[in-house]
Image (tube, rainbow, N blue to C red; front, top):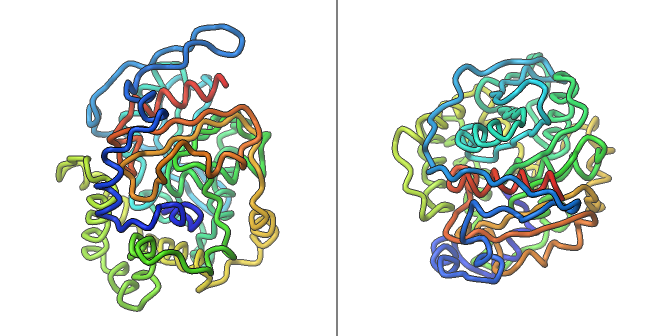
Length: 361
């Protein structure tokens, strides 16, 4: 979900305590974002920035028919909206979520003239491995290379990348290693490229408490739970309630996403990802050269807008200054009040406006 750099900044709060403490957070940045649909007034060239219309979360319930494309080692399932020849936005989901995190964001961006692509990450939904013998690994660079392969397969040279959780990390990596493919970046949670060496060091006890599921996945008990479809779906729903304390989602909303957790590779991918981050398993050698570059914590020079969700227990109080130095290009930060971890689904207008504004930085 997140990396240790992020949760080391969580000020020693347990999950419930963090949510309660952050619910009243009102920094100048969060105050500025209190009106989610308010755009930046003008682009650097002076042209007005379009204001995204305000919609209530849950206005849309689905994408219609998804598409499939062979890309790299995968047959990737994805939703698409907007004009076929519009500027491209790739929206990348996290764990435990799926493409429905962007079910309201995608039509908002499509109405602004964007071609919106929303892929299922490996191990999710209708995305499948092309070969049975391909190792079901999920190191951070592998997922980023999936996105590059998707762009190549769809003949997309450059796109705005926007995501949260695993999606933010993936978008950060593509922006750092292949900046020529990224027009602009929206990264929820800031700089999330994993530093595996740093993750070997213990955090404050209450911060470690926030990461209970990561340690659970490291155990045989957690592995058995993830490999049982009913148990893993119940676990994922519980995580939703912890990390988005103000989000009053209904059974139907969760059920639509939970279908993506029935992918036959879901358990293997999720378990590998979290075990790999804390050094319990090694990745494939084919990704070593990319992981070596990522271990150096490369800077990101593409135009970037970072978002912090104030009720997300893994978001640090403040204005994003803890990770500001990683972004060297045009930059803006916003803290979003009263919103939890699944920011695009909880506050779709805010997220869509961030994409439009980042594209004009």
